[in-house]
Image (cartoon, rainbow, N blue to C red; front, side, top):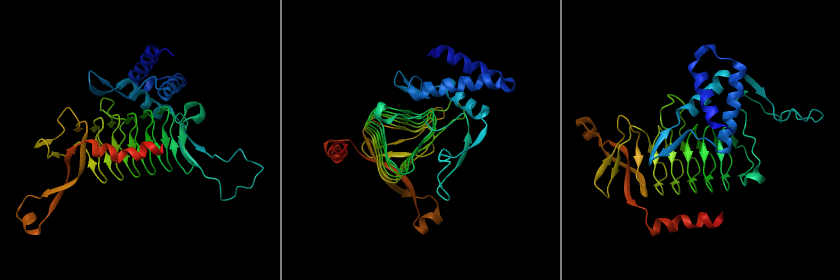
Length: 290
């Protein structure tokens, strides 16, 4: 596939605004989703160690929503001669964004039965395991050997590195607009524990451990007890969790006389240590089971 031509076509159609040729746009969208599915392009990439959104790719995904027509899907319609009364289910979505045509045996991908969905335009590398029910949205990238556990969400354009474990109930927020906004990034060998949430373009560095229930957003300050500092997002950069950091839920006193009199505390994530041999041993069983 000529990726240079694909980029030019997306940018041209985006610049044309409301006067686009719908059929031509749908053909470009199909090429983009194929490239995303194959891992030939990504919604975000690291350039000189800095993660940046790939704006033309995100613009192309938005084009899919814009040019698609909402249609009804009925997975059991093919069994016309069988009585599926009460068993059939249906959903409604843009016809430009169907489910991903996954070939699990050829791709060495396991999607365990039980209600998971992977939207087209998502990349699943070799060795990925998806436990039910989980959802992986358009533009997402899931690296080799990653585990997407039950009730986990990989939001639109989220980037998940190799050997990452998203535990049960973990949430990675999605983002499409504005196209220049960096999506959530979880680098290689990180662990996102149960019911943790990573949102608004937060970067989780390589090998970091986000403990159960931790919530990370652009407006969340993170207190690093090891280096005695506070990590915050900036005007131009989302929140970034350092490599190997172990983050757990904590609290700090709320300000003001009423808060003090009431003994109120505010939630805050805390880096209690950086990854060591004991932390690695705690995740060794998971690798053995795979």
